[in-house]
Length: 478
Image 1: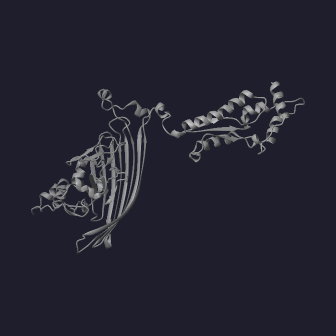
Image 2: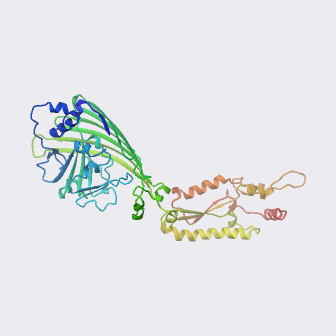
């Protein structure tokens, strides 16, 4: 179901589309067209730009195809480019109905080795490249509702577009011919809901502006297969007799759930089922992309050089994907990265004569840290020991509290500890927690195989025998 509100200017035939747009008018207002008595005009040659310079389709010596605006709209809901691309010879556009995986497109074999997404093909949107430096791109940012045509170049001449270009897919937005406003709404099976709004204006002096926004929501035909696609584009241009200047910006946000694939046995149970792992791990993907570009084109009236183009563009694509990986697999030591923080003690660095078992265990912890750091360092795992001193906890309060005769509570051990610490106080638990957080952070990424002493400077002070005797007396009294 599609409802549209179009101004009369929006129905005006574009250059090179006389008969095709007349057929579009037939579908909308048949009575008006049937009343015409004049013979239909001859179809004009399609002007293409996918050959670096504009020329008619008949004169292009390449394997190039053009999908016009009518075919794009008739192909589907204009959410996936595969709706229109799959009709072209030599081009395979696999749509797995999974928005968490972009279309897999191959042209005469180029791009067939890509598990998902587009590799080995150049993607161009209104003259601005949409392919990354690594040769990978996505067509999800195409604004199909505002497109005048899609040009697909196949064969060896696609090398004119640079390295690793086994083909070229170029989308061209419809020109601005008059002031208009457009609102469209779609509804379909499996919870498809889509709204699109657009406006364009043509001013004086060659200035023109257009803006579009759309949102599509889909529940999906399987559990954990819903998706949302939000898209916005704006374009500001100036058209002169020999020069065209265009500034355009675009935004795409597409969060999508991933139902994962089914084995043959699972498919036999029901093709609309979803694996338990997809629900357990909430597998999904989010895509955010922003792009802005500026282009200038100058046409020459005379000479062998027909035109020159200059463009500048910038963009950012952020992809986050949550996979169904079992905890045991994630914990594999061969997976690089990680931090191990052992808890030692300041007491392993001083001789007290009262806790041989305790200090020997804490001293062994430091030795273990050094050996593990050497063992796991090559796989990116850091190992550090933190050795706290006197930390004010409930256990330490019970250890130091005493109730001598006379009913006046005194804490000689606590008082002496405060006098021994260079900072003159006991440590706090939050100070230990912050130190551990710093050790585990990227700010300490080069720290491993060592011990961090957190004792307020006490380990550098000498403990007199009187405090040792006080500890023994306090332990003997219970």
